[in-house]
Image 1 (tube, rainbow, N blue to C red):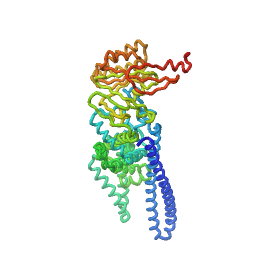
Image 2 (spheres, one colour; image 1 turned 120 degrees about the vertical axis):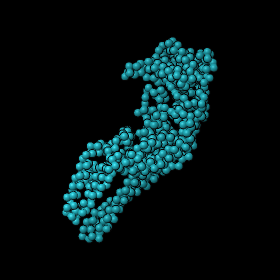
Image 3 (spheres, rainbow, N blue to C red; image 1 turned 120 degrees about the horizontal axis):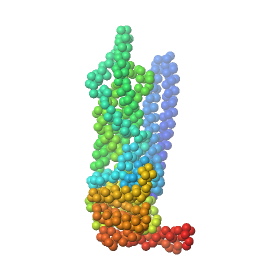
Image 4 (cartoon, helix red, strand yellow; image 1 turned 30 degrees about the horizontal axis):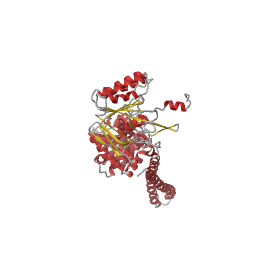
Length: 594
């Protein structure tokens, strides 16, 4: 599909979900009216049942019908929310195809100006790669996606396994969107995951005590038997009261630990139900790729287990009602019963809960890359090489709208390992460097890249393009840049292969010092296993190609000046730049005389 066909696809789906949503809303209104009528009927029939006992049967049936309608209404409301999310997803996907990805999270919380490359390549923030790619909605999913974009896979087999999984997911629009919509239903807070894991580490209060299991059954049973027997023997009434007091006495011994235990888990019912729903979608889908099969297998029965946990937490929360608390703790040792059951669940499933939640976040990441692949059918999957080579045809920036994106070809390998790119301001040097960097990030995650062909090694990337000063760290811009260059050289001296992107290095010093320092740096790079693209306005660096013809190549971006008009074709050409535009523009704008 091309862009227009994709737009039509998403708009059609959005309209379909809108139509289904209207039907669902009408159904909800009908159920609401029927529920109200049933409630009124129940009250009326119950009133007359006091004079006509036969009506108690009808009253009971109406009560059952009311409860069923309440449950039905709740399920229909969940369906309505799901449909609203599906409609919204398709609306936002349609907008993203035109360059407006504002409907998706931008990952600004992950911005780190000191990261080796993410700040330079606009990986996070408005208009970022994260915003274009990520369709994660759980907190852990977003964090995992940020981690993958900040520190891509460095194992050849893992990358290929991801490619296979992403190819499969790209064809599963229904699964991806329903999985994404379920994630949107979560009102998850950043601390929910940590609190769940903290609860798993809380030492058991009751479960490790074998005798307590017997007590939890025996004492409530004896209390209830005494209550029933009190109708026949007044002596048992006193015994029932005594047993109720004993139950409260036992609870008093544990009440502080019970309250702490409840505090950890009490507010997690809704989030656990949503986790269970995501796991359900995952384990009921049929996959052929080994990685997705593995994730689905890990989710087998996980939805039931997690839903059981949510149900236990929901029941335990009944203790928050004072009257209920008084009644059930007097007769059934309620608090201790649910502490025991929850601890039993924890003992049986604690080792799996983190795995299940990691499965959700990994599935979100892969599904996001699958959506990105589906949205860019002209993009290709990279060929992952063992040799130190980056070779691409038709390379463009994946975030530029397709009909506006200018592409270029480039090959760089361990023989010709440094490319010096010269050119005028605004000619496209920095954008090309970012195109190379962003595509490498995508390739090493197994995702599609903006190219007609792309080969790259499993290699770490380092950039120096947007170094910033820091008042907090009392660090000037120039010193910050030197620190960045030092960290790169320190890694290279450990024989660590790197892909390096540098844009106008040593901007914070005079031109002579800059030339000498830049030339010395390039010579140092030639001694180590790296591939480097260096964008500069300094044409003197281009002379290095004559000195190292087998290792250094010059390329340039040239402006076009015709009929006193400046334009750019953004095409990479061999050789040194011959045209500059600063003086031309200053004259054109009246800054200096013509």
